[in-house]
Image 1 (cartoon, rainbow, N blue to C red):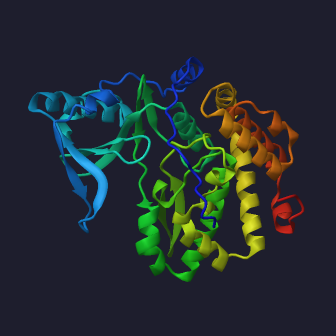
Image 2 (tube, one colour; image 1 turned 180 degrees about the vertical axis):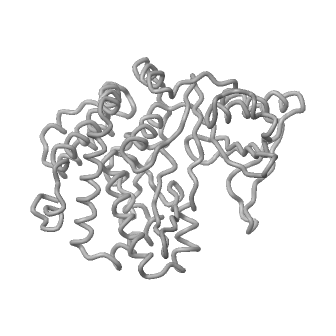
Image 3 (cartoon, rainbow, N blue to C red; image 1 turned 135 degrees about the horizontal axis):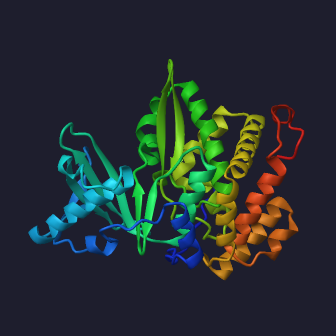
Length: 360
């Protein structure tokens, strides 16, 4: 665990270029919506949102004038219908907008919308953010290369994301991890190794404990834990390779200690190899979709020249692949990293994993 400062300055938002816009249209990610991010900024006032322990959540609950509220409520219900249903107004009579929360912490400054079904009190959330090309690449890569599918919409300068349910990593580490059984801790250690490897492979950065969630899954007589990223702002931007490895953030120290205490080094190597092999197979199964996305990101500007130079050198030191030194964009580095994984791990067999007969 290093104490150096991994991230030095705020990441700018990058515009969606014409090729990415066409890609989003082709895969039904671009759909006209009745409200924009800037519309929600017209709130008349706000109050701080506290959790059940009376601690500041860093969210504020905003409210609007009576005139604006009626229009905003209708539009948010419409967005919910587009995101989760057929986009019609038929379900509006059963929906209520319980809360609109705003977060000034972080890059995206999202609005969190709570929608409740008045017939049974079931509720869900979705988020409205400013569009950022690197965030969109992150969402698409998560959809294709992780075990999870994602639902999101883009229209002009507004991004709509579905809520990813789970226990915030920082809360889980502080309150629930100490209560886990020894077998559960071992399983969590394994999952963190795989999550760490997956983030590095697809260059998803800043996975501090509050940027991912722990998802408990009940399986027969035990609980299996999964780790899911929930923040994709830092996709392919930073120059330091450590930013793309969750193990190097001090907020994840307890998870790193868990790995050290529960897993032998050969088990860690095995789980890394398994994850690389699984990602390679997902690249293959994604077919033309990921090929198109990689072709677009290779020519897009989503980072700075200094970061590109630094990252390509550090990845070369890790892989000894001379092609990384020729990269001129962050997208080219990402494309080569995915090529490297696909080329070296798509045919990995269980026998090779057990015998460690290929390079880790």
